Image (cartoon, rainbow over all chains, first blue to last red; front, side, top):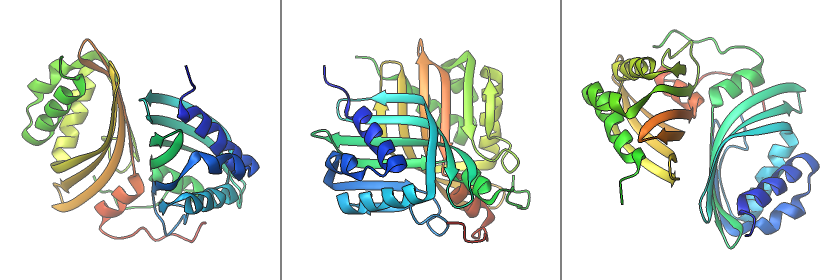
Amino acid sequence: MTEHSLWRFSRALHRALNERQFEVLAPLLDDDVDWRMYGPIDLFPFFGQRRGKLEVLDVCRQVADNIRVHRFDREAVMLGVDTAASMIRYSLTALDSNKPISLRLAHFAQFKAERLVSMRVVIDTFDMVEQVLGHPIELPQTA
Amino acid sequence: MTEHSLWRFSRALHRALNERQFEVLAPLLDDDVDWRMYGPIDLFPFFGQRRGKLEVLDVCRQVADNIRVHRFDREAVMLGVDTAASMIRYSLTALDSNKPISLRLAHFAQFKAERLVSMRVVIDTFDMVEQVLGHPIELPQTA
């Protein structure tokens, strides 16, 4: 039984983010990979859509420039033959401010021939922005 | 081949939200169901954790009081024997303001004997809050 593509991809991604070992990640990305992290692009330029291996490596470099991953807990995971989805709780440091950030995300990944062809990431972005700011966002009562 | 619990649950949930047919939803909830929608509780009291059938029915009533679902597109779905995860794009109306809201969420659900025992929902909450406010949140450049 072969290891699911998710586990190899996850190890390579975290080595890329924390140790800048992008040469381990590159061969696991399809040339035409479709990558979407939903979130406020104006605040965090690494959000949004990227297409193709070069753009995805580039955005991973941007993420690596901004954060350090201390720990992640996979709270839920589902594996299909060539698909995977997880809910993950991350403990990070924002490198510019040295602030600890704790965030929760869900991702849906699709692989083909053991390479990533599609990644979609949804993040609890309001909580993330408040932590990066270091204080609650003041808003009128809405609900 | 029986229908996956997700599909029956999804139909019942949307009937509960839009038509207030909570008696269809109730028998599909485990007595001890664990329900967590991550988001800013101060702004939207229906976020947070609920435990047990009564609390979950209650929070679904709160959601039904606040929004109307117009359309949802399941952009990704994974089904296990008793588990399911989806990424869904919703088109809603906020009932108090009559504003259209479009949001993306990911959910992980677990069933036991065809009843929901666990639900976790991650939402792109920053985008959601901006839409409810009706204007961008003004923030200092952070990244």
